[in-house]
Length: 552
Image (cartoon, rainbow, N blue to C red):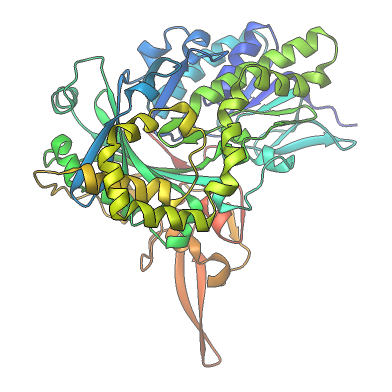
């Protein structure tokens, strides 16, 4: 039997979930090696940009890493608003009640800055236990002996054995798929997020958002400005920039053949945003990622053998109406995974770590937040096409109009209710029709014009940093029927655009014409969208290769 290097714990991925797991392991003097495929922690990571410290959470990032908020975050976010939009009419709801529910604090963050800071602390902590953190290493699979998981395999290193493997390798986790704990079969299980980081001087952020130094605000957007695609937009204030983006249900994006970069531009150019842009727009970075819908894919048993999944790799992303929380749940899961292994080791049975981890996720209330029982109990009825047709007709009728006028305050309170949001159906009625009708009935026209010009798609791609390696995606069926959806759903592709990943081509054979799809992985942002909507073989690039985010 081949002898491989052995560690007590191997953590894959140095985002918040992996950092939390590594820190908690190191505090128990457990020998821990952290492997990160980016050139630096954060270089592969994208998020909308809010991390919460929940009062009920078993672990928070600032408790695990003292000084985090002062050194690694952007601005505290104390105000939260939802803008319902219909054309140029807008009705704004105050969502501060739901934002502060169970919230000790909330900060806007940029992942490259945050994750890099965390990685330095992680390396210091794990080095003291005989481990450390290595970047530029892609973990490509699980090492097995006799059918049992005993470690990991890598592109750049020999296989490594471990008593526990904590996979915090993100939404595109190759370890979760290798273990059969996650698949990419259903577009309705996923969201796609697209984001721009926009330059703005700190004084301009303060003046235009009516805040002071050390204060921040979050804005959400819903209604008719996204061409009927189910989802919405967000804007978060950073220290000297804004994070602005959109998040859509992937099945709706695919069905509508909508192009993500154009939907983002619909938000950026809406007159409502002129009060903040004031004719000035400079985009630092364009980015995209898949987001798991925890209501459907948060794994109730996120472990197999020695493998424990945390964060996006386990589907632990809470998106229920305006509740958008992921990084804080990854931190809780990482801490609990480490806690479970430490307890199992103390009992002399490290193989029990997975069951203990699952038990802790339930006892600490993490799974209750991720997979609310109210949604599971009601979604078959609330998401039926018949009910949604009836609801749509009612809300657009004179009776519906009168009800909105009469109960506008009740609607705002409903948007602030954790109970109600825990059973919001994933339908066009919820995400498009309701906010649009609220704006039509209760909204006021926006004054002013927004004449900014966002960059063209080729400029957005060209501004990103790449270290291109071998192609990491293969189209298995290049017919348009099988893979054509990727031409529009891929955030760096578009119909008639020759510079992106996926392109539509017309091939002439024996006097007939057939539409085919071609692929160029060079401008890939590694979001994983095509793995769900096209017939592909998808894997990550090797360590240090592919796209590198400077903001994230």
